[in-house]
Amino acid sequence: MRARPARRTGFTLVEVLVALVVMATMAAMAWRGIDALVRSREIAQVRLAQTARLQTVLAQWEVDLRAVQDSHSTVEPVSFDGGNLVLTRQAAAGLQVVVWSLREGSLWRWESPALRTVQELEDQRQRGLQQLAQRNPALRAFDGVAGWQFYCYWGNAWSNCQSTGSAAGQNAGPVNPRTTLQTPAGLRIAMQFAEGSGLVGTLTRELEVTVR
Image (cartoon, rainbow, N blue to C red; front, side, top):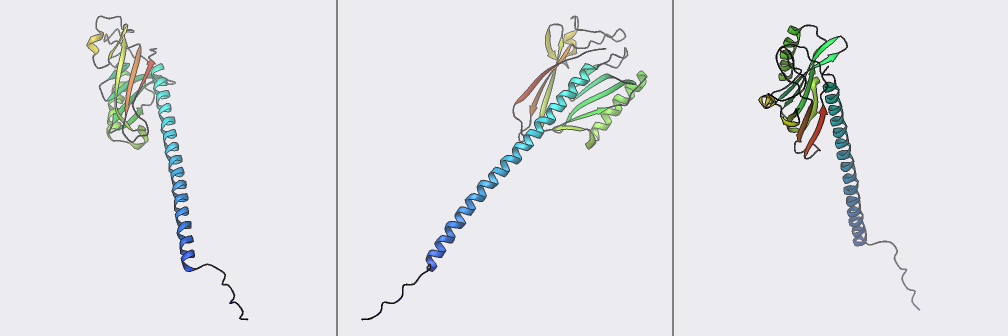
């Protein structure tokens, strides 16, 4: 009686190749899943940081507006020309000029040192606009803004802050006795976010203007 040949053990080349293909496919799928999670986490962190930055900007706006000071001169306590919001605010050692500006999709903020004279206020106002025009990176407050509008509360209604003539004849709030300039009782800010900024739509915030 002939002895049966011993049965071979192990895998054929085809089986090994199939196993490698299956493992490679699973590894690729796992990598894509991990990559998607990492990307989602990064996007979430960027948006969270952007939102926190925006909250800081709004808080600073509120601080500035609550400290608005009438210098009783030709320098308006609050003025807006479409691109720049200029405020005169109280500081510990005098008055400060604060300029908020929207330039090339970014919000910028500049503040002067404490000032004592009207001439210094006027000079520093121009200096602030010049500094912002030079795009000093230290002055950049927030990125990703497509546009903004400011509405002033004069009398019992909101109107565009650039339409100062619409406030004439109304009981619009504190009046500068030397210039008859009227300071609004509140500001409404409507800010549109740029595409890809991580924020969408228009943010509207109403802030009280407290004149000292």
